[in-house]
Length: 556
Image 1 (tube, rainbow, N blue to C red):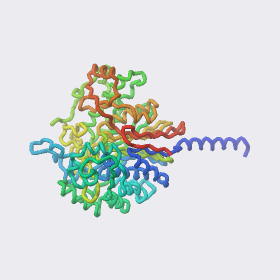
Image 2 (image 1 turned 120 degrees about the horizontal axis):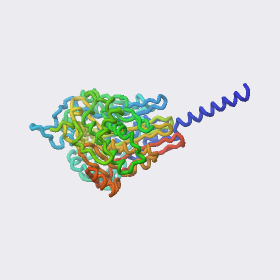
Image 3 (image 1 turned 135 degrees about the vertical axis):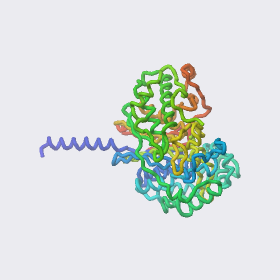
Image 4 (image 1 turned 90 degrees about the vertical axis):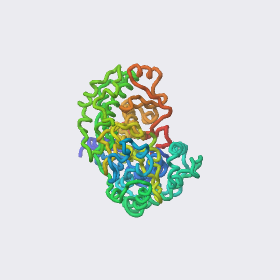
């Protein structure tokens, strides 16, 4: 072989190595809503687990250390990307309505909504999906057994941990319902009252349930002694769960929704989450505008007008795709977005009442999110929930499992807002075995040189927060700013711009009001975004946790 040939081969090998290195992250990263959960995930990565094993550890640990936002009694969505195949999939672990549920189960004889019936107590609980998701992840995507990945959560539940100020604030907001149920009060309160600083939360019954899942997988929760105790307790408390509800629960792998915005490929949650559809519809409406040339107040006005239209479609069309037809291709079409954009003016707001047709008249810090990137390039964006703070407030006796109140995410009565102010239509009406609509928006963003993993809790504001993160990513800002900057929001109804302190200047407020917008300043900040950015060109990985929460990010 001549020297020229050897030199060519060497160059080919060097170029190939450089390309290969660029496609493998130099470090792994986790960002979650609690330092103990982040630490649990990093421990699993160090033990040879992949991102999916770490997701099991983080989700289970959050179920222990952040009971106000998620838990074994809840569910959620796991957006997964497997580096080896380049394939993304959404694991749908959303709760389901009990088979004994009915369309008007929360209405009285006069057809009026029974106050808080879909929010407090076991009648408000859907069939949990998180335990099934943990087992599914381990069996189909992970490398390590559940006995390894659940070990950190089991230890935290059995030995306890000192709660932070966030927990104390959350308890104060739900103190009345937590006091109502003795099993709940015995775990989360201190002598029947709000715990004092330094309180150690110990959950030995929950540790036993986690041990059952570690030993038996999905059957450890949905059958056997755990299932029996869940069913007995729920029925004694006035709920309607049956053994067949638990036995028939399945997680579903769904194809995520995908789209493009200014050179960014976006992969996000599909129905029964509304998150990805509303996000992509919003971005399609905004895509033609030269945003860098617009005044900041004009850009905010346009973003609000896009949200107004996309959230309207959420109310009209979205629900469980196994039960209702969703015109997904139309909603995600750039041509459809162009039609919606035609009525957008740069100088004037269009009142939501003018959008036709409207729904037939007659979700805060409640939820959690984590993002994971491993050194192979596998990714997880997971948003999990029990819905409102501490879910239904009801702990099933002898299990330590705090049940969700996700039934409130159905349209209890079309046109009537839920606890987050979202209005829904017939597509999201209650039906036996149906999954309720969600706003959860776990999302991947990718260009040739950059990859982002992002999501947040926040009820109906989740989608708007992720929208702003996409715009920040497009503008080249780092994740530390995506999670930090003040936020604003609009969701079609109520017809108002809600905004955090500092999100709108005094001059912007005057201009927006002159355009016809109604403004609703918020006294406190919202959201708890967890984000990761892998810059392939620079060879760097960054992670950031929202300073509004008590989360932690780790890169190593």
